[in-house]
Length: 180
Length: 149
Image (tube, rainbow over all chains, first blue to last red; front, side):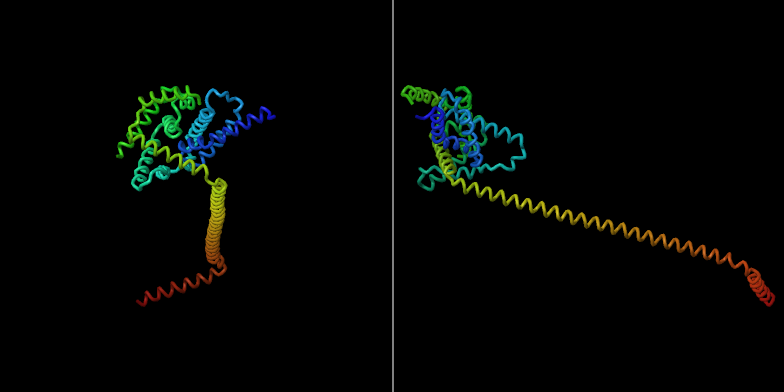
């Protein structure tokens, strides 16, 4: 018979397997830096492992992990702002490179060009969003979380999430409209 | 997920839809964006990590070596240049010293020559009568010349 410790370890392994790609994707979209996203994902699961015993299941494991990832990301940017000289080591890919990844469904060349242009415009708008607006926007439109889940993950109330989301959408709409 | 949760979610989604309505163009752009991020993330997540890690390590190593070489070259050339400057300065000091010595020698020689001439003018006092005779001869000759004139 497996001990409680072994069961917990197995549970945690399952959580890592199930949610690692999603956490990585969120961090990649937030930072546009593959190496940084990998490092922060590792840190996120390390932190989660340390506090796994304290996870009471009040929210889903995904929301809990996302909250850790958001905090890690915030800490990272805060430290980076203080260590201004580190800006030289910024590995973020530029917007054009990020827009290179096209949705696979587009078949004709024209559709591909249009999709490429749209993706670039959304990236441009995302870059101009505030940190909080960007987080909320990515959680909603990339990770497809519900407002309540976003509220749990960010620690904001649902009304604030909605307000951030609507401001973010207005900026994206403006970017798309301005270039049309 | 239970049916009730699903129902709650769809209701919440309906409310959100009112507040955050998406027109077809915006919806299409956001769909494209989501799919693009998903494919990028998938590709990045499944990339061969060891290779990337070793490539990065190689880059770091190469950069480290290049920096090290630049530092060593800088230190060596700085040292050589410093030594050259020091040597040139020492040579200049030696040259100045040499010139000063020459000037001092020349001064000393001139002084000695002056002293010699002074002494040579003073020492032959023993021959004073002869000198007086020569002076008298000269004066006689000049008075003779005057008379003849």
